[in-house]
Length: 635
Image 1 (cartoon, rainbow, N blue to C red):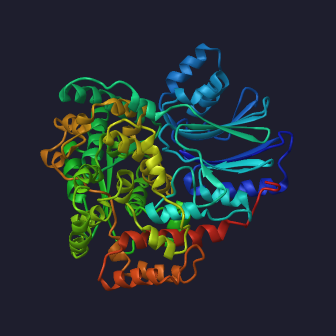
Image 2 (spheres, helix red, strand yellow; image 1 turned 60 degrees about the vertical axis):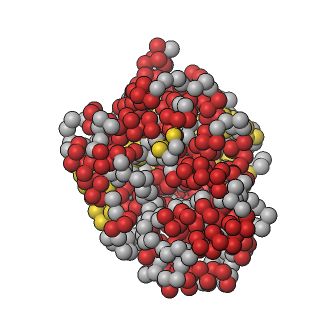
Image 3 (cartoon, one colour; image 1 turned 180 degrees about the horizontal axis):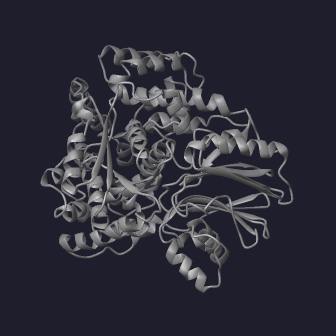
């Protein structure tokens, strides 16, 4: 797992200038945390590529950027290809030769053989750019579900810059960059930008399963895999026990494939169904020492350490845990390493447990993705209740239920029942796509306007559009598909990548193997959720492996006690940030009200205020330190 960056010029005969070389060197340097084991740069007519390496496979000879076929092809690659050995055997049979044992060289040979059709053959997590010096063409691609990031910055008629880390693009973009007001509105509403946006107007994300061809100043984007087609395919037939056996076979194969490594592989373990199921499969394949890692909090309602210990003891793992302090990180360093704003409070414990794991291993498996594939979130229960609640008379909703919900005391839990009830009542009579987005919404439209963001923008519209791509499907499948394309790609997987790579740790996600995702998409709805019972096929599979106490545990998110932290030193940090920000209106009466109410304990605005803190930390530590400081000459 690594960090990549580069520039391709619109004029394929243009050599990199000294300014380009200097900018590329800094762009590589600002993401050094992604690859602490080495760095490399390659410059030639028409291009300049850079790389930071975290050595996982072929430790001795897998350095990058890598050349192939007498230097015709050059690649900078981030990720792991789990089926590279099978592809290598196929390519050897087709006449290709290899100088290394790395998966990187296999990707190069596969592109030389199959061109744009190559990414569909890859089983893994990846983001890469390949330069063809004969055809003068660059080819970029991102993995099926968007586990690994790939950002790009196109200057019409000049160049295409790309990278793993937003900081690198800020360095390459120089002073011709600005904040995207619609992405800012998205962020305040949801904690992350929607679609292919980033917080920076000129920088975009290549979306999951997309490739980009850049040739003589023109960019063309296409897709090599379509999740919607998986949901439209004929349903897999069978009773739940039969479906569970078929699911287990694919899940076990995914875990086996993702344990391929030349360094030890461990696992994140919360003690929940998903991470425990991953550990169960790993234990079957690794009878010796197996590391598992957990992070807890002094605030008991936020800590899952007891559950994690139970699972670790059950499987005999070498379990490593820690308890976060009330002021757990250097917030300035944290913001710099994460590199872009993300309003998800679980980013903090993910960062902490990643640092813990990195002391022992370079690779971990995580349970992310199961909730989106198999209907694990409480929001899917809210979706079911929504249809009935819309029949409640509007006068009763407005004048009785809404005021009563506002009076509910804060429970002090991660995402307590009081919070869920308030969110449900707040959006319970909205149209369905708006309501589904609303279950997780932070600042509403009026608040965003008061903070000075785009008044005409509707952040939830993208969710409605993705649901519309499965018109005619069941409501559950529409929401699972939409959540995979939006919430999973732009929040959950972004969080995992940024938190793990901030400390040079690789995270793999067995539930998001494309073959397993396709299988889950084709399952009957009842195998995922029936009544209010969720993830039924996984729960059935896990019955023989996990203790009953773990199987019967309610869903519990991996959140941090930011509400309490914001009443301590983190609150002081926010006050300082608000006093200097240019991104929002720091003098907004509504903002002052939120801070005062939270600080006094009158209301709990922890989720909102953390999202603001993350945004303004990014502004101070990343935007102000990198934007406009360097630029590629003429790019």
